[in-house]
Length: 493
Image (cartoon, rainbow, N blue to C red):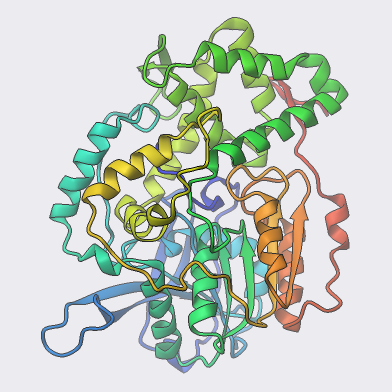
């Protein structure tokens, strides 16, 4: 994602191909076509039923002069052949991620829920097949890890001029109205929602605007409504890295392999303290096998460690990578590992939608008094927003947009203990203002935890019952971190 920073994690998870057998569909799916959905790059696929819903770009417009856009959606009918009357809508992250592109991975993660409930994936306007606000920044394979703000601002402006879209209408509030339009179009009175990362904001806005339409909600990797997305990424990443280093120190094998890990990390930050300058290193591209030269600056270090901190498997590589880079002065492996994840993230995000949301909803409330200069990430995100939003079309949001949801819909809040972007403290914030919620923290895990079998089974039980009462969460006792890598052969048995 380079300097683009919010995304949910299903693309980074291991999974098998899924080849479902479709039972007879309900009447409201009769006009949908069989289609094949795939993750970016086509690594994982699944079959679904796909359709489009035509809506006005400006929700307040009507008549012959109204500009119409088509929203792409997909349905995975329940495996039992007769889904419950309240399906599950999955709300993707980003902002900018295509919900349909997550379907092959989320179908597997939500297989228990899918047994008797339809899964519905609507590409938010501006993503995927819904008038995507995409922008090709560079063909340079290293561009993601050496972001150039000047070039990014120029490229974004050029892309915006080429879009057939009024970006003022590509906000979370309008996205929520699109969800309700699809709900009505498909003939459902109520739905269940599962939102991941930025999708938790979409879910909260939908519950606020359509309080009688949500039967249950699961918010995974929670973003409180008061939050300017991205403003606190620096402190959140630092806390996650400190927790991972502390966990290594408490693990005898990890501590023996990487003594004084905190000192090594401090040394890295001191060595690479210039945001634009540093040694030129050669990195072998993990996919192309070609050597790429990059300037390993503080920006590159921060970007790389941030990518690696999302997923538990790559989190457990961090002690090895930090130690190696500090002791040998060779950070190539950090860059190469992060490059693999970075490509997936970059391919998955419609960056125009990211900034359409951010400039309308986040930059106007950016906490200018929050000092993040001493964090690993610094203020790179705020500086980029300042540049981009200066020329971005001004968009207003409802006065109460950043107010929390205060209704009585049952809400299951999920967090990962080591989440570097939406820490468990955010879940506690939402819990404190909710009248009917429970917050579960998955020990030793990162960003997005519903993909864990334990958390998925709890989620299925919650949706089936429609209540938090009596929820059995005992399987969480067995959760924990992945084992640390002490060398390149992997973790100790």
